Image (cartoon, rainbow over all chains, first blue to last red; front, side, top):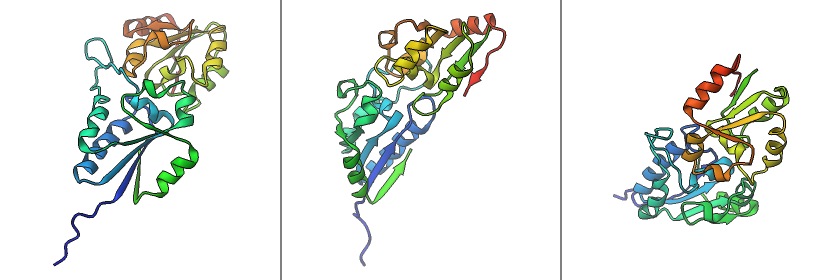
Length: 128
Length: 101
């Protein structure tokens, strides 16, 4: 009997929300980890305020800060789950005065046409 | 006097722009939660904020800034830092506290 195991689909997680103000960023990260655990082909895209999820040096201490978990460290661990394809929208980065040096992980900067191309290549796009 | 609070990113909602449109000269405006992104140098809202500090007392809540990986060094000159205790003082000093959600 043939079982449909070992089917690998291309998943794109589309992140457009800033961290902490809403729960979208954290929820996305949870789902990314699930997808990675099932050994799917995972790509992450950060557009609009989603870029802010990757900002270095987030400090959320309970004593002096907002008192929630700093989940930004998890983005650095994604490499260990073979999640290495991380893309950032050029315009979103520029209009926030950010550069690649401000971000936690190695990313690839895409323009609009390249971002559209990335989406076209996917089997599944999940939006947060 | 009034203390206006803005807790949404200017990139996502027009809360700050509406606040600035309606608020009177001399009013105070506190940027907190995702509202702190408006206080930063180098964004496409920098000119709007640079103009606004001439008319309003603008404050930024530092714990929300730091949670988002930013510091006062990244904030436009003239925007004043405050903390939770300062937020309470501002709320007490002002007659009402309109929130721009």
